[in-house]
Image (cartoon, rainbow, N blue to C red; front, side, top):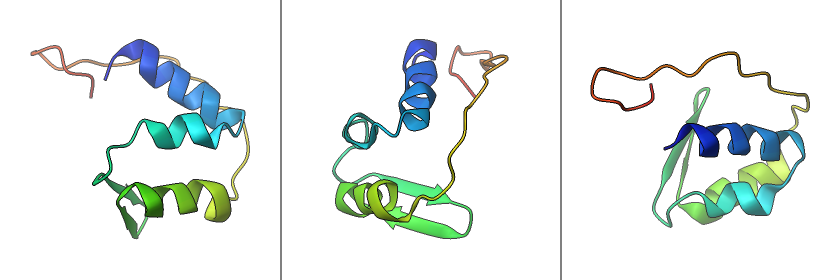
Length: 72
């Protein structure tokens, strides 16, 4: 994932743009959040549309890449 997409992801989360966020996930994606696992885009979409209660603003100070260039 590129730095641009990561920054855009959090901006869209903050604006509650769930359609854009959900479209980032593959149909068979697995999203682990705290102690819950959401499997597949429909479950992930349900989480973002119906279950996610936290609201706020993300501030990204830095993104860190591994030696091979992957963001970690």
